[in-house]
Image (cartoon, rainbow, N blue to C red):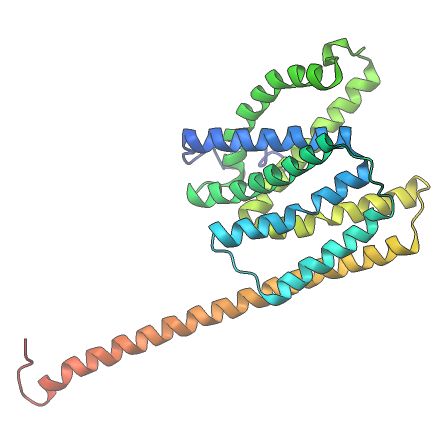
Length: 288
């Protein structure tokens, strides 16, 4: 699908091997993420849902730093904090504590599963040396089939009804098709981003969506933006821009350190070779 829409190489095939255990783990985690996010949106308010998603960044950063050796500079941490405060100001204006214990539990589950899905998406691409299109091509059919089987059961459990009770109409089919098309684009862009950047970077940039939702609602649907939300938007945009700068600066510092270490190792090797040749220059045989 990625090559067809111009987001991948035209000759790219599903090359590379994804172990069965990796496929099962990724599918389970991704399905839990989808189910918990949609359930959270159903049982919680939109504001609480958005605020809960802010927890994905610190959780992702903690997991990457603890288990995957990812390093974050002080400037990167500051940029993340500024972005979180900005997005928090945007969403907290409409926040009211009305969620139940079940809603909070579902929101917590969505934070953990979404963070792990994004981490595993990038990790499996690097671990198995496969492209984003290959990973998506191997996991999407399994995910689609499993969700097709699970969805009616979960709908019945949570709402007491199923999709088969819905009266199908042409407008409904049109919007279903549009929704599916958007979902394809979201999945392709997510896999491509996570294959190249870290999960934390993906999340920081992803919060631009929250800002855009508010701006589009204000521009086209008569939504109201308070002064607090304007300040939050500016902070969030500034934090995301600053994160890009801090991330590039940290990468440049690390690359320079690696070059110095490589240069020092080469100098040490040349020095050792010269020391080994000195006895030969003096006309004596080196001791064994």
